[in-house]
Image (tube, rainbow, N blue to C red; front, side):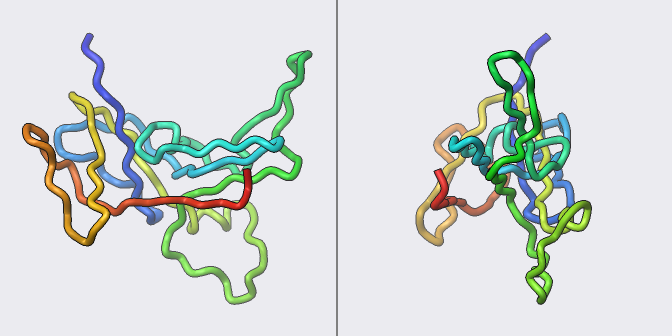
Length: 149
């Protein structure tokens, strides 16, 4: 059985994005950017399957001690998710539980028959693919900066 290569697509909406032509859906999920826990940080490459979690949780990680006793993260920990255009409530009050879902981008993990690369232009021009490569979709570059970690 031949195995393909995984690529992740983010919609930045509450809609699950479709897979590019010639690829097949593996699963849909929620777009994870970055976690900060126990004074350690981990950024997630948005092109990989690790940036698309099947289940949404504001604390998507556990801490285990040397005795293999594990607890959900509950300290001064953070998770950052790719958002949607949904406007914040005027009150700016904290959003909890299922009420947060309209603000979290959806994603799809797709299997491609060959390696996939991202080509960035760093201008307003859409870049060309290298010779012998085909375009799967056109999007925007994303960079995240955090004062944490």
